[in-house]
Length: 80
Image (cartoon, rainbow, N blue to C red; front, top):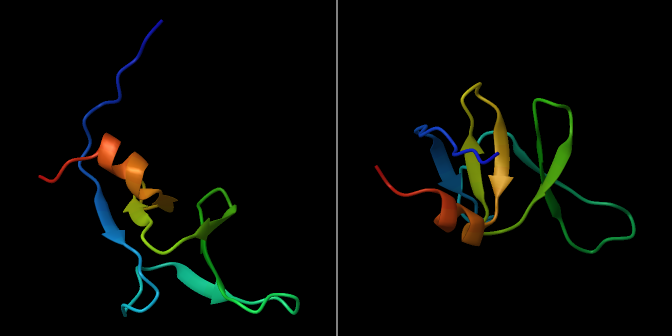
């Protein structure tokens, strides 16, 4: 069987660490053995996802936030 995704309008913001304010839910963390920050976002499922500069932060239909790589975002979404 094949399925098509239902058309749903989403909200999304592109993340760049040097632009403030950051999209809701993103935080920076460091570890003792890292010289750089990692940017993270928590999902409704309780998972943490790494957010890279340029990723899109999507707000889903239940208010959940999750990152999406720019190339996937471009293939999946278009402006409305």
